[in-house]
Amino acid sequence: MDRTTGFLNEDLERKSWEEQRALQAVRLGEVVAHAAAHAPAIGALLRSAGVVPADIRSLEDLARLPVTPKARLVELQRENPPFGGLLAVPLHQVRRIFRSPGPIYDPQGFDEGWGWEEALFAAGFRRGDVCINTFGYQMTPAGMMFDDALGALGCPLVPTGVGDKEVQIEILRALGVTGFVGMASFLLQIGERAKEQGLDPAKDFGLRAAFTTAEPLSDTLRASVEGLFGATVRQGFGTADCGCLAYECHAQEGMHLASRAIVEIADPETGRPLGPGEVGEIVVTLFNRAYPLLRFGTGDLSAVDPGDCACGRRSPKLRGWLGRCDQLVKVKGMFLHPGSIQMAMRGFPEVTRYRALVTRSGSRDVLTVRAEATAQDDGLKARIEERLRAVLQVGAAVEWAAGETLPADGKVIEDLRKWD
Ligand SMILES: [Zn+2]
Image (cartoon, rainbow, N blue to C red; front, side):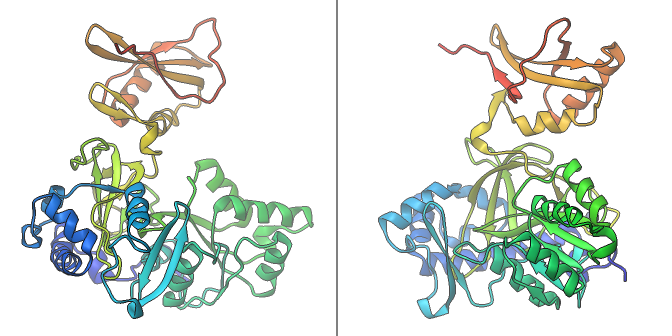
């Protein structure tokens, strides 16, 4: 079975990104007009921004609206329960209502999915795959999201949730399960338990494709699970409020943006959209009629990298999860996050420990990465500096921490600037 090529929706996924965005602009105009007319909170949002629905005609026009963080949605719902004036359809058109910590209540309309089908197909799931869905089915949408998506793909599934590992092992064997949906760390635990029972997960199970989200997937974790089960592991990015936003293809170099939502990378302070490669907050606009979200601030950081992909999909790629906005440090006018430093340093196994220091010289920010390495030479230093500049988009000097030991407290960035 070919699990590495093809498309779920070839016509759409192979359209140029410009064409996909043009289609999004049409849907944006429709959803803004509908939301402004039926959701009082959206009407108020537009008025406070001084715009009328007809002003939002292109994706660029979206920047005229402010970013709405999740905390603001919680506040709106508290002031005006239960949905904060954001519900844009009558209640009989609501299928489910989810509750997430906050608390926040997310209504889901009929025929409004979460869009994970495309992601699962790209991850190698095919019609007829028997799957286990280990995401929880209660209160929050994770379990239902993948239940709907697997159903739409024609994959029968066992709604296991995060159940007992022994039972998961029994199901994997009894049904010849080929697909896993859930957290990669949980799949690893299942595999390790199976080994304790004297089983070889690669031989005794028939697992082929695993899809994971909701936690950062490290190269080590991916390699361990793939090695243990002889299956491919692919990840996606999404949130409980928004559903699927991006997903990996077989080429595994970042996550293609899904065309079902408008994903912007915005300056976390001003909400201004940022350019390709710049790190900022993931801001999402959905086309849902029941519960329209316009420029919803996820609080998560990433960047979008354009460029062609070997798989044939034309959408640019999200660089992966780079952390939360509240961990940001601004250096030389650019936002810097521990995740980007870690990403830059990942390719240097010689480096055993490092820490980025932000200091000030006159009115200038200075970024220095102090590092310990097994071979501390100038060639390596130059290669790290080059990589740091490419990933962070600000210059950083590397200094060897000669004869001293950097503290092992897990801190990646230390801001030593004094502000008075
Ligand atoms: Zn691709």
